[in-house]
Image 1 (cartoon, rainbow, N blue to C red):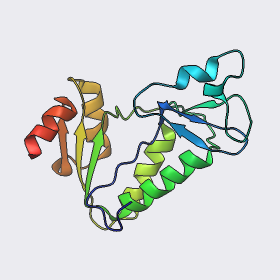
Image 2 (image 1 turned 60 degrees about the horizontal axis):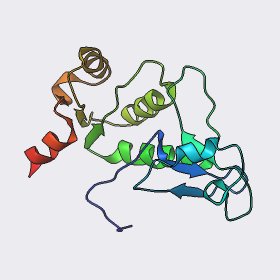
Image 3 (image 1 turned 135 degrees about the vertical axis):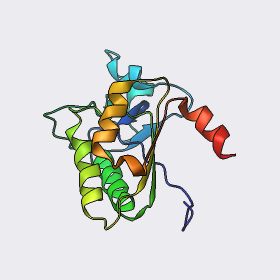
Image 4 (image 1 turned 90 degrees about the vertical axis):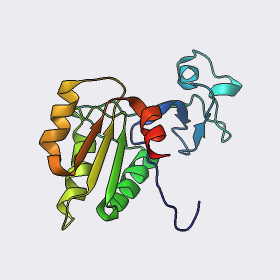
Length: 162
């Protein structure tokens, strides 16, 4: 990682291309294939077994929930680093997150980051497609004069900043 990167990207809910060993907490990430299906195979195979010998690997996705205790050290570490940087960053870009009411973990992360700042950040929320409920959740949570809501998806956003 660069010592002073211009941008930081945090994937807060895991992914279908991540698997985790429940014994040693090693993460397996395949950027080209959704490997979550391997966790549901009935028998231990090479593609769902850890290097430490533990089988079977587990899906690493955190679904939004009113009641959920997240114990994965990998996810907790990502959330802590994200919180640290959200406290310091003046611009937040949130991609593809609908900000559901039931996602108490991530709402708490944003609340704590906002509460530790003197000035609110500029927030750009990027969605693919128009969804007024999602827009309203962002507008209730963030200062509307500090919020830009884009519904053209990531490709439109990237083209606009070139």
